[in-house]
Length: 160
Image 1 (cartoon, rainbow, N blue to C red):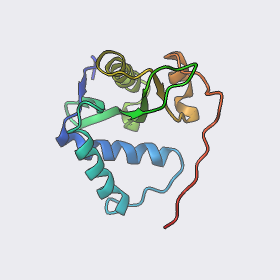
Image 2: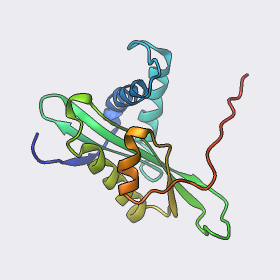
Image 3: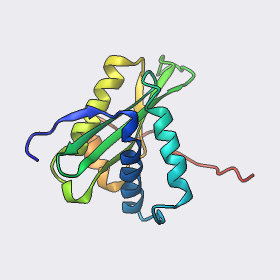
Image 4: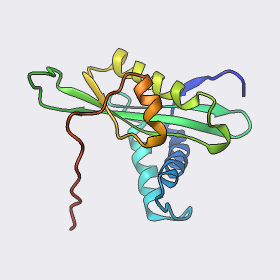
């Protein structure tokens, strides 16, 4: 693999996005289970559906000729109320940034994220992009202009 060629993911790339998601989640220290773990079929359905919604979701990937998809980044749009410091009503969320371990440190994630940011800027009305960064990704995101949010994220899990 010499030249980085980023392409927009298609619906038949959904399984590859699930694989990359498992690599990412595993690298963050969470047990992802085996190939039959229940979350995988839900994630496959999610990515399959989202990849059809090209006006509000995009994923960009890099292929290796021998292996297939080895890196990717995904993002979607959210409607958000405007405020005094942000008049936009659309925000983007960047996530699922992952590279197969055998292909890391080659700029593949950067190429996918940069292409996704171009999509947000050129093809959507997003006024700002948000993400949850790991320590491993922090340097990449900061180099692309991301800054620490003034208000840290909090989470409440709803138990039904």
